Length: 314
Image 1 (cartoon, rainbow, N blue to C red):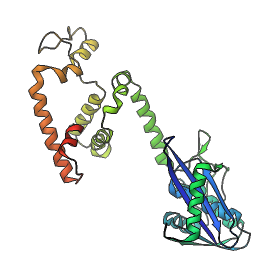
Image 2 (spheres, one colour):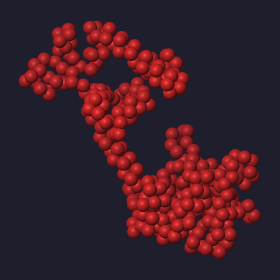
Image 3 (cartoon, helix red, strand yellow):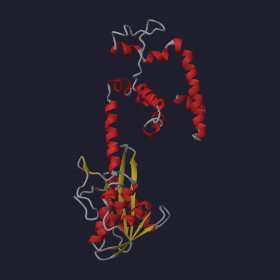
Image 4 (cartoon, rainbow, N blue to C red):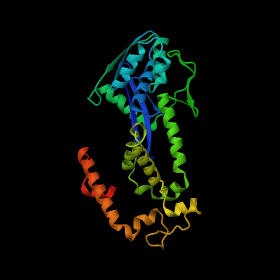
């Protein structure tokens, strides 16, 4: 009988994630733990613990696995019944390669495995031992990286690789995420973002910013009005609104001057629009409307923001 556990921790000093697994065999007291390097998730750590225990189990034996991960139990029971994991399923679940190797190990060693879900941190002696092994391994253990070519447990003819690593995430989501990150990186390195954006990183409320963006993009962008709002928000965050300084730079034949028509002295740019004395009352009205809208959203979503917190966000 094996008690297995996985651990996903944040390394405070290095500001990075650490992942490890551990198990202990009840009758012999044999135990093992390793650090895992790739594709951080708590379920992955639990699956690695189960796989490692099965690799150490005797051939042609009955094995009982005690784990506190319902997700791992459900995945293994679902796919363990299949003769082969279909291509669609294999590329549509996280940690598919670990699941496939567990099934392959069970069949290759002719094991009869029973998974029993137990409650975490409930005083079960061997489960607490496995938990300590996993946490210790996450920080101090020797790292273990999953490497293999293909698996007999799935109907696949190739293993998807990215930068030398097996893609052990939903393939379509992975491609979407990588593509999005590439676009975001290019966007962040634009001239206006480097000069005006990165230097003031700490002044941006990112949670609020991305919530606003998410509310307007993709399936939410269904009207021309929403499209205009999306375009305006992008230009606003890029400091790329059509102020006179930019219009003069782009179309000097049409916009002869870049000085503001309000005062005729200062160059009209984004900073000028926020400091111009002729626009003070307008900004007060905008701030009041934003505060009222922020309070309404906070009350509707029960966020509990105080008056001063809403003002700071604005």
